[in-house]
Image 1 (tube, rainbow, N blue to C red):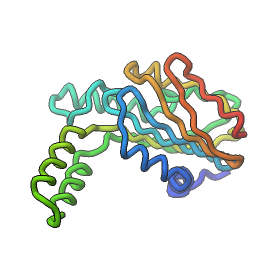
Image 2 (image 1 turned 180 degrees about the vertical axis):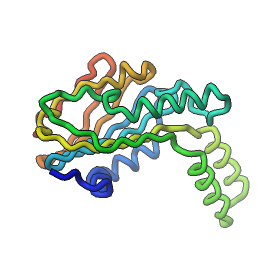
Image 3 (image 1 turned 45 degrees about the vertical axis):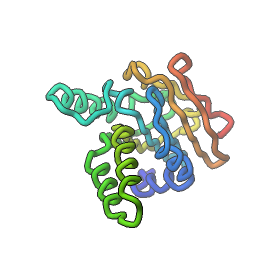
Image 4 (image 1 turned 30 degrees about the vertical axis):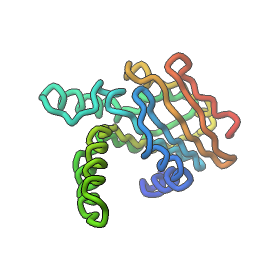
Length: 200
């Protein structure tokens, strides 16, 4: 079977989970990453958001050569799906796309510029808001994986190697959707197995 186009995978995973993305934008907790998983036929799409502190141990913009090296190494690790999940051999999965990136500072700067354009509210309030934004600034790693599996039902139980790969990661909040329904789950370092059997 020919893999789904990347745009189809993105639509598949983004559409039903807009509410989760909205919640994600309003929260940020060290040690806790967020993972969306969508199954459609033989296609499986995963989207991970992980705080910088979980992955590289810091959340500020990279300053030193050491910081940049840590980010490059993390992106290389995140680009390898085996560093997220131990895929059962009988799932017959082909990972045909993996894209990992650190949220760019440009995105944050664009957001600030949007606020600078608002001239219809009190300057003092705007300054207070800008100060709060600076204090709340966090970097995140965003990762997307696209898989094609001959037996996707074998992924009804997944063991996460993510916690071994990234020692600062403590928990993943998971939203999953299949043809039979959707559900929310928590996977913790001490019990790194996700059971999705009720959705298959």
